[in-house]
Length: 207
Image (tube, rainbow, N blue to C red; front, side):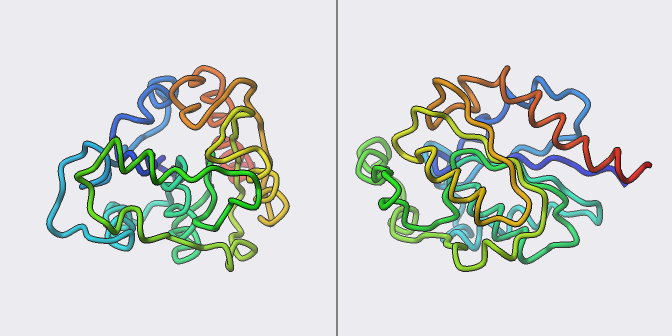
């Protein structure tokens, strides 16, 4: 059974965030999500928490397995979904995420003040809540590809290294010159990594 690739943006909420990568993956069936009320994405009165965002993703399940490709906060949602639906989520690709945990001890800067200045209209829950799965990271059994930039002050490489050690089946690839938006700025570098990673399980299943 072929898996679809669900692309989840970060707190910017932009449904087009992953399109530079998606355009380089023409052989993959894709669903690109935007987050209502986050960034410049129009709000939805039914979306008032990160749990509501998780429900938006799960509502698109159709019985086939999915691969979750996620950036930053979207990665925390992807990890939560993988924990709740282990039979539906096949693989994870996480870029510059933190699983909702406090990563200040790993040298990360706080994104919230700048986000508030750029998007003063967003609801308080966007910055006040935290979809934290850090206590359950070791229970995420899905093979996971971690993609990090070496020049990201929001989620430094140390965060990726921590997740690599905490997740049961994870590999880390560091992109030189990559920052928090590396999925856009370095799409040509990471798209082949994602494609090869998502193809691995299919090859094993057909063997």
